Length: 251
Image 1 (spheres, rainbow, N blue to C red):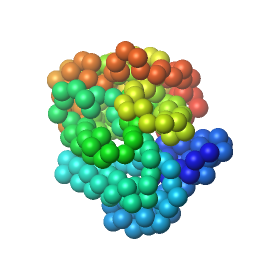
Image 2: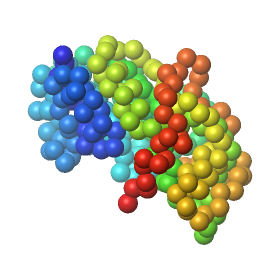
Image 3: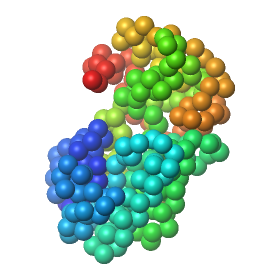
Image 4: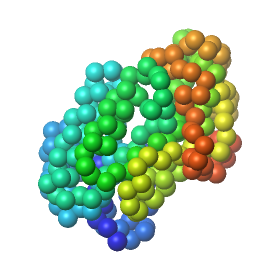
């Protein structure tokens, strides 16, 4: 069993990862600003990593503004990797996104690509878990694409998955040795507009979803297959129609 520090360990994915790794018998530290560990300021990082074998980074930027998100991921990752070298950490696991290695102009993806490069160049064994969009994002995707009662989204393909399945993929990576890049996804493929339409319809949301393939997704136009996994990805079983009844909108 390993000592594993989970950066972002009190958030949506992190709390689930902590629970899964603890259930497997690992010695797990849930590290976040709420527990006195701040990877931006470096507060508490060195102390949290004492004796750690593995660091899992599932933290996320509080702002999606282009310069903010780049600053967050590069600063946080640089600080973590330096502390891991000092502590003798053997394995760095990071949650990232399917599509970062393909041509696209999404600012958030560019920041994740910069994070991935820092990890690959660090000299520490790594596993990068590239996940598709989460079911949990259906409301926020709709919100950023809404004008009045109309949600305008492209029909680009996605293969979304449940956050609990994402956490399983991350915890499995943390419990093993470094594997480099892996992709994980859900079992169904939708157009982005169809995914949001299904979610809003099930929840009784009055907004209408309109498809426009020139509409931006998080600030940029995307191609049809930017957001779907390649052959060989690990496919989880949870389907959207199974997930929706169990997950009302978060308030």
